[in-house]
Length: 520
Image (cartoon, rainbow, N blue to C red; front, side):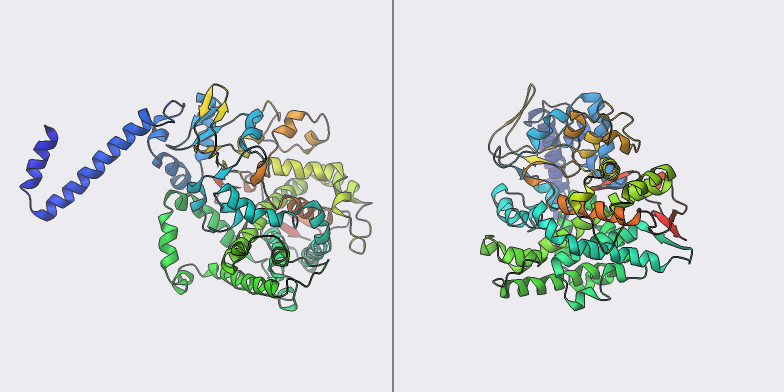
C-alpha cells in the first residue's frame, strides 16, 4: 500500500524529479534489504560480533580511516567481549587463538590458500606475488624466487650486506665531532632501501656512486615520506578501491604534480625495467656472485607469461616497499631501546667485542651472529613489539569449510588473525607491552615460539624474512659494537617507537618527530 502511494506521487512529479526520487528510493530499499540479509540471512549471521560491523563496511572504515588505523584495537576489544571468533565486517571473521594459527596459515601441501581480494585491491601493486589472490597463480609467481631468498641465497648476498652496512657507518662517522642530530628512522630506511635497490637494480657504476639512498645528505627523507604516505593511504583505498582505478586513468605527469615525491617510485620502476630487459637478454650468462633477482628469475622455471616486464616491475616495487618499511622500523625500534638503556648497551657491546673485533676487514657471517644470544634476543623482542605486519592478514579457503571448535566457517569466507594480538597475549608473554629481551634467553616456553609470528606462516609467509634477519643482525652488530659510532638519543621517548596506529605496518603517534640521535 505504501509503495503504491509513493509510486502515485512520483508519477505526478516532473520527469527529473521522478528520476531523482526513484533513485533515492532504490538505494534506500536496496540498503534496507542488504542490511536485513547481512544481519539475519548471511552465512555469517550466526557468528558473534557487533551488529554495526556485521551490517556495514562503514564501521571498519570509520575506525581505520577517520580514526587513523584504530580498527585492530577495536577488534581486540571485540575478542574480549565476544570470544575467540568474531565477525569484523559483513564478509570477514577474525580469530584470536594461538593454537589455531597454524590451521589458518598453512602450507600448500595441507590446503590451498587464497588472499582476500578486497584487502589486495587496497594496495596498488596488482600483479606482484604478494597481492596475487589465486593460490595456483601465487605459487607460479613466488616459487621461483624462494631460492634467491633462502638461507643459502642470503649467504651469497652477505658481501653486499656488509658493503651497505659499512656505507651507513661511514655516513655516521663523517658526522662525528659535529654534534649533528639525525633521524635514525630515515637512515635505517635508506639502509634497507639500498639493499633491496641493489638486489633489484644491480651494482653497476651508475647505481653505486652518488645514486643510493645513503648518499643523500638527509638519508633520503623523501623516500621515507613516500613509503609512509603509501601505507597511510591503505585504509582509504581498501574502503574505496575505485579510487585506484580512477588514478590509473590520470596522466602520470598530473599525478607527479599532485605528489612530486612519487617520482622516486617512478624512477625506480624505470630502472627496474632496464634491469629486467638486461636480465632477459643475458639470462644464459650465469655468475655465482650475481645478486640480481631478475637474473635469477630469468634463469628460473617461472612461466614466460609471468616474466613480462610490466609484471616484474610491479614485483620490484613491492620488494622495495616491503623490504624497506618493516625492516627499517624494527632496526629503529631496537636502536631506541639499546640507546635508552645504558646497561643493555654495555652488555651488547661486551657480547660483540670478539666477533666484531676486526670489522670491517673481517665480517662475521649471519650464522655466526645468530649464535650471539643477547643480540638475537634484542632482535626477537623488537620483532615481537613491532610485529612485522600488524594488520590482520585474511585468508580464504576455496575448496573446503574450515572447522574451528563448534563453528563451521563456510568455503570462501575470509578469516584473519593478527600478529599484534598473538604477540600481546599476557598468558604467553608476561607484561606483553614491555621490552624485555631477556625473556628470549631465560625460561623460553613452547607457547612463546608458537605465538611468535612476525613473518606470518604458511604458503604466503614473508618471502624476505631471511634477508631481514641477516640485515638486522649485521647492522645492529656494526653500530653497537665497542668503539662503534657515537650515538645518543636526542629528544626521543618511547612514544616515538611504540605502536599507536595500524596502517598494515604499525606506526607510532602521528605527531612523532622520529627516532632522533645526536652524533658526538
